[in-house]
Length: 409
Image (cartoon, rainbow, N blue to C red):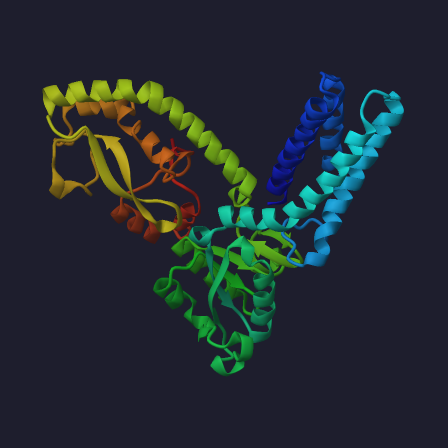
């Protein structure tokens, strides 16, 4: 998130810099000035801001600061780095042409803008990325003291979209009083039951337990339900498998998997890639494919051009996938797997399937945000449940969007 905030701040500073430059040139000097010289200083500014970003230690590397007394420090550091960078460039180049009034005016307004962004930009970005639709519904497991510590940490980081729905503890409801009142929803041996009863996105074991088999059972249940498992500690050896550890603003957590798409920057880049590819496909390839499919349908099997069917998407949510129809209309046999010599498939449909032309309408699902260009293939609802019984960690695939093509292809 810090990288996104940094990029947005760079855009703000750039807009401010060139707006002030235009005002100075157009309103005060009323004549063209050294635009190239101003451009050099704009590069220096961005380099200085990047150096300040790299200089932050782990305590300062926090995208969202809630206490107002901490707000000016980040903006002040940024402006100090910018001022130092411009001063160094000014001395080294012995530049007499650029306006010192402009530079001082820019530094003053940049401090105000950056200071303002530290408070409001964090909220806007968090609402856009970790809005209510993206809240991670979290189930806590462990003793009340550790649940309280995690709850206090989660309250400080609530902008990140953490939504605690309850806690499982063997201490019983009597230990959950005061600020924890109402959080206890069962014992630690009820993990499987609660995962089935509630819509959970992640389970957090807030404190290690002595029974390693209990932890492994939790991991197994989370994988069966396609739920993220988080351990508040680095316990790779203790859990009997390689885990991924991260320090999130002072809370050390351990995850089952490395998840690059948990990074908002990676999410934005992947979504931009999906939209770019899907738009090109929908404008160039899809219309031609629609014409071919329509002609084949007209000759061999009149009916709907597209075939829509329920499939499983991210977080186990069902969506309607688009494909070119390759079977004669058989509503009663929609969930039946197509075989090599299936009589339902007309000859033109076999051609569409052989060259995967029938899959092209799924670029519409990509534009709708239901699928990605690359990801695990979505299956029938019935097949999804069947495979989940065969493979313990099958449902972990639902942590990402299904794709048009993936490793299996």
